[in-house]
Image (cartoon, rainbow, N blue to C red; front, side):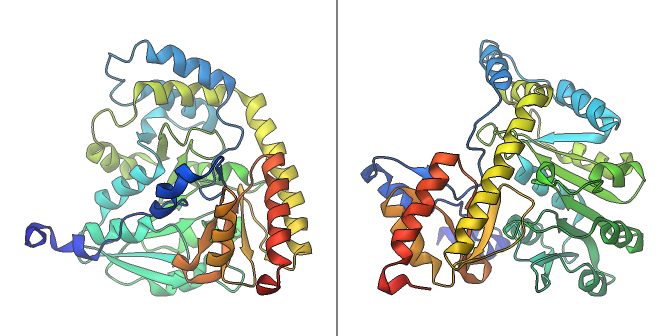
Length: 370
C-alpha cells in the first residue's frame, strides 16, 4: 500500500475543512446565487486603493517578488513603531502558524492552548511530532489562562492564545493576558494569534504591539484576510523581538508573499478611511444581527470579530442545510464539539437581512421551533 510510504504522523492528520464543505462546493452549480457567511470574509472587498495597486503589480508579474517583502515590513514597522527587521511575512496567517510551530517544537514537546479554537494549532503540532495539550475554554468561551499555566510541564515549548478567539469571538482581559505572559517559565514561548485583532474596540485595550515593545516573550500573528479583504491574496505576518522572530525568517520559504499580494497589503494599510468604514459597517450590522438572533430565541456571545458565535438551540447541521438550499453558507460548529452552535459571518446589510428572513421562515416551521 502506498500509505506505508507516508510519514507516520500523516495518518493522524485531518485535512483542513473550510466553512464551505467540499460536498457543498460540488453542488454549488445548482444554486443561482451563493452568499458566503461561513469563512469570515470581508463582504466589502479590498480597498479601492489596494485593488488599483494590485492591478498595477500584475504588469510586473514576470518578476520575482522581493525576497523578504521589505516594503510591507517597512510599512508595518512605521505603523506599529517596531523595527522592520522584527517582522516575518508569509502566505497567510495559517502559513505563519506553520512556521512558528516548525521553528520551535521538537518531537515530544508540548503545545498548550484552549479549545474550541483554530484547528491548525493541533494539526501543525502533530506534524512536527509534538503533543497538543488542549484545555477547555471557560464557561463564557474565553481562553482559560490559569488552566493553561497549570498545564505547563517540563515538556512545554509553546503556549498559544487566540485573541479574539475563533470560533467564539471572545477576548480575555488584557491585564490578565499581560500577567499571563509574565508568569511563563523562561523556556516557554507565547504565541498570540490576533487574526481578528483589528476588530477589538475596547478602549485602551493592549495588543501584541504593546507586549512586544515591552519585551515580553510573545510572537504575535496577524493577517490581511479579514479586515483588509485580502483573503484570496494570502498575506499574513508575525512580529516579535529579534531572538524570537529570527527562526521564522530562517524556516520561511523563499518568496512566501507574492508581488501582487504585497502591493495590495501595502496599499490597504495606507487607506485608513476605507478601514474605518469597514469597521463602522461591521459594528452597525453586528448590533442588528445580535438583536435579530436573540429575537429568534438564540443565545449570542459578545464578539470582538466580524462573526457571531450563536447557540441556535437546535442541530445546526439541519438549519445549515436548509440555508444552503437557499444559497446561504454558514459554519456549523459540530466539529468543535458544539452541534447546536453556528459561526456566522457579518455580511453586507442586504445579505444579513435576507439571512434573518430565511431563518425566521425556517424556525417557525414545527420541526425547527426553539
